[in-house]
Length: 108
Image (cartoon, rainbow, N blue to C red; front, side):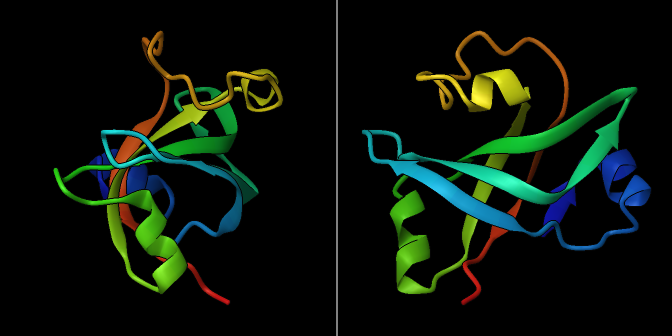
């Protein structure tokens, strides 16, 4: 569930984004998750099908999703090419595109 930025929320009519968790890693910063969205989203003339999510708050873990908990995350849109690469969740060189924050919850 997207909470910010406002203009992206308005463009998506504040509807939840749904997707599939493809990969999850653990690290000293709470880990990361690679998510493939069920429907691509358009933002500022670009289209995104994949996002990398990481916890926004210190002490939160992306792995909490497996326990049915919501995790407040920062999400970064990545290209299809990056999503299929061996460095899919490396967003260290990200310099623009779509980025947003919101809650992630696993639905079974």
